[in-house]
Image (cartoon, rainbow, N blue to C red):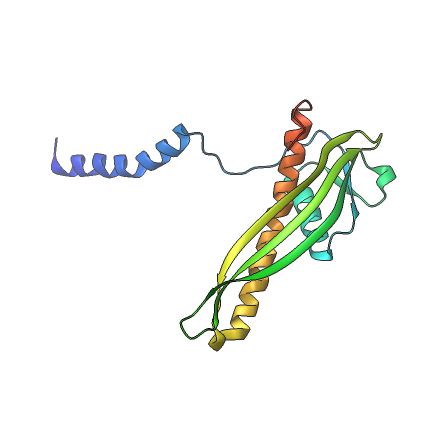
Length: 175
């Protein structure tokens, strides 16, 4: 074997080893959520950004349509409460705030058109820690809004995944 051939084989092994490890452990890129329903209606009082993120997640991540009227839907997602919060996480040595914890808590339940409960009253809670600096207040406000947007998108996908899990396994509907 020549040194060039050996070098190519070693580089090929280095490149394929991590990919093979991910495949072997069962890793897969998140795909579409498989829901056995035709249309979902979103009711309750979600904030407009959360409603938009839920509709986007449903339309792009599933084969299900979003119904405007609950009577036209197979499934009703009722958002009973959504609470956004921000708490102080740390102070700097001179007593100024140096970090916040952002939180979003969503209470919801899911039922079919006949009133059968698919997902009982449940809660999803998500947090993100964020550094804060008094010298860059405007940039920090923009960063906070970006964090909240990403958190809401993540919540929307988590809600859909919880619905899919409950629909696949009707016996285990307690979360």
